[in-house]
Amino acid sequence: MSVTTLLSRAAIGTEAPLIEVEVFLSGGLPGFSMVGMAQTAVMEARDRVRGALITSGFDYPQRRITVNLAPADMRKDGGRFDLSIALGILIASRQLSIDEPLAWEFYGELALNGELRRIPGILPACVRAQTAGRTAVVPSSNADEASLLNSDVYEASSLMDVVRHFRFGNALAKVESIAELPPVPPADCLSDVRGQRQARRALEIAAVGGHNLLMTGPPGTGKTMLARRLIGLLPLLSATEALETAAVRSVLGVPQPLDSWRQPPFRAPHHTASTAALVGGGTLPRPGEISRAHLGVLFLDELPEFRRDVLESLREPLEAGRVCVSRAAYQAEFPARFLLVAAMNPCPCGYAGDAGGTCNCSRDRIMAYRGKISGPLLERIDLQIEVKRQPLAVLRDRDDQSEATATVAARVVEARERSLARQDCLNGRLDGDALKRHARPGRDGWTLLERAEERFRLSPRAAYRILKVSRSIADMAGADAIGADHVAEALSLRLSFGR
Image (cartoon, rainbow, N blue to C red; front, top):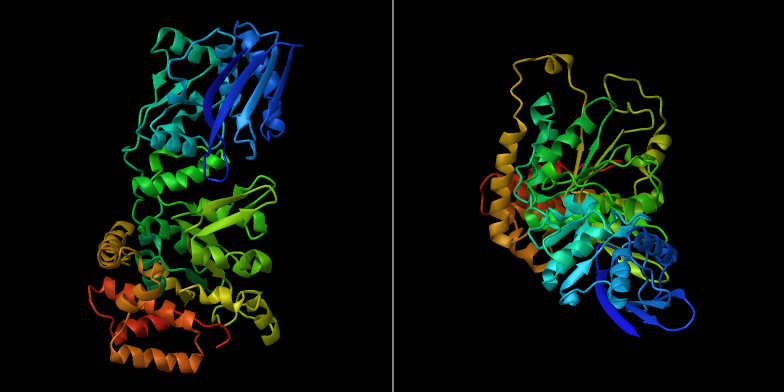
């Protein structure tokens, strides 16, 4: 009788808990049993492993094979344990020997011919293996994800490649890191936008402080065009931040854009998206669009067309920066620190208040349309601006000196550095004592804000968000203190519905 233990990792959210794969060969009638809360895809490993071993030229032991995936109370799914199980059988049957097997972690789904297939969630697993000081072996088709790390990761295309490596040495290629690959800049430039001075200003403020933005205006005024150019104003992600966003794509099995992996993501789900599609969910919890937009931009076009319950599900992630999807068996937590940008028409037909169009919507219909967006959600949107139709003369003016993305982005970086040096976070994330210390205006600014609070019945949350925007405007001006003019501009950039 022989027992062998190898290491692998499960995939629960963006976590990768360690799994001990124990293989036990004993006497009795030949058979294969698996224990340890293994789901259907894992249970089917017995047939994949048997086929892979035989077609690769190994002897399949005619003994009782028991595989235990520990810890036993953790749910396991997918084919990621196939390679560990196959190697465990070979070691237990003395067809293979590995020195210090617990210094390695093995991942990969086996084909019946012994080839290794791509699995989701390889990046979080490799990050945890690196932290634990172990060497990982991954399928060659996952090498693009592993290349984002600077660690000991080896790629293998088949079971036989792994066996040769431990029999003869140096048979597997080490995955080369591309972490320093220069990024490709976004193609869309802010200079394409003609006119819309206030909207361009709002984009810059949103980028500086991480402030949520709502644009309201008739069709064809450039709301979507503006939103898509915001991503170019945001600084490149640090290596640590980029790994967080790449981990979400890895869990979903989405290919990694190696030439732009450090650029903030931009996601624009359709208005028919469900709550599970937007926030995340499923029997086996998977990240949704808000997690795919982590540290980037989530753009919701035609905002009132989204279902009410879908929009309300954004309220908690907007505050917490994370989303927890709970199921009866377990729960998964996903990152969701995104910048929300939304666009909508002023009424169902789109032309209320537009000099260039005729609106036939009644007041009640307009109020019902705007009422699809709740007050608590609106309060979490710092900047609420109106995007008006531009005269044709502005659109065809070739001498229009609209600033390029690179010019504005440089100012954004400078203002961000000022806020990070002062408080170690963006202004949009100021809270508690930090908000009181760093976003406190002078006497004139307080007076102006108090008058606005009384006239427009601002809630404390709305007032605090106006102060955060004021702090960003002051940083853009290079001012240490928040003045009345900064508060005035912040108030002017907060459009209130129905007023």
